[in-house]
Length: 508
Image (cartoon, rainbow, N blue to C red; front, side, top):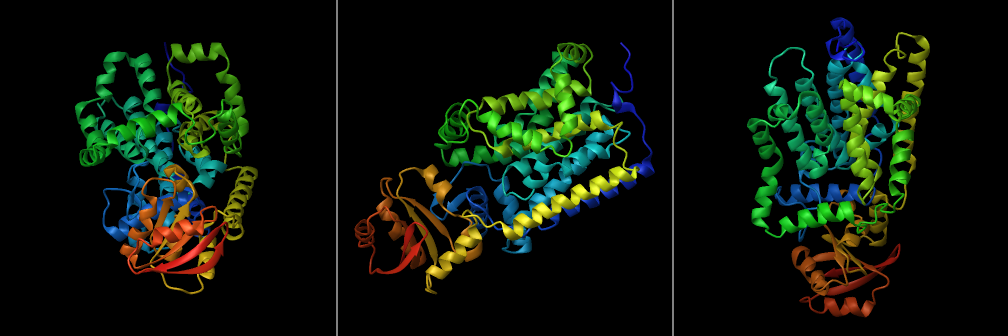
């Protein structure tokens, strides 16, 4: 069956000078969007503080193998790429909020450029359009200013899928071995960023290749060299830490896979309707100002005759739909749901929107340029306004300032938050780990109801000589005093209160 130009956009032509100019303007635009006001907003709990604290602990300890929240508390809930990235930025640019957030702006810019490269195969007449859509869509723009795993994950998945698109839709009949290697390098780094979710695009790749080329074609994409690249870039760290800590095998498979997929243990919108409450607003409002085209695309997707057409004649449209819909179904079925989880889906979404809008978007038109300019200005106002004027209770810089004021100028070497709980997860969520950046002191979280917790204050004092204890006011003062009597030669001074806790400055 012959293909029309719209069915097979891979072999279209475009003017090289015009494309070079478009790429330059696109790069300038996303550099401004990514880096403007990038250091103004303080770290917010819980996730931003956790990732930052773990990275700073790596820098201070020199231990880049094992992620830790404090000197005595390892945490393997996420692989190390996020921590390594932040640590490298801090080592380069210093201990400040801009350095913490700069890698996310850079990942945002590089993701847009990778979408441009995908666009050269998928929409050769306007390859800049997918990157423009992603770079100016509300949710990818806002996510760029959030310290998380997901912005980096999206970048590495974009790298992987660029390799796949170049291999699956080649301009020549060459084998594209380098493209296969690029695909597995991207998947390896995605796996080292967030584990199994980094491989979700493969669930769209496999059925597309099988439908278009048959099962035998899979051998080309799962070539030994590609799998070796994936092992080295994505699995080697896991192998090393699991050999050093044998209990991690059970932890990874049970806590990080089974619990997240099948149990509500993390209290992340696990209700049956949680996927509607979380993902529907993100994929609609987050796609502004492009969502009207998204609505038209959804109407097409619900038509059985359109699916039969795509399935009979598998093209780039079928691939993009599988890349988007199959991972989305997994996200909806999983019991742990957060808005950032679907950020990588804005990659195929941007490409699909670009295919739908390519005939209607013409930035040579003055009206469209003016509208785009106003939207970009609105995005910058939102980002700057949040950075300068939003100071919620989760603001770790505000918490650090309040603790400094409450400590009355006394010297201490560490801060320990003692919470009336037996849950390690509650400690991870409630401790303002990010104050480490602003106080430049290690932070500890103590679950008071866990066995052996009464011994932890003494360990903190032995390591730092003097510490500020922030104690949950539901814990009796006598219980803390009793625990401190175990410490050799300690003296304690009550310094007042901070939020719902009382402060003790203790010194050996």
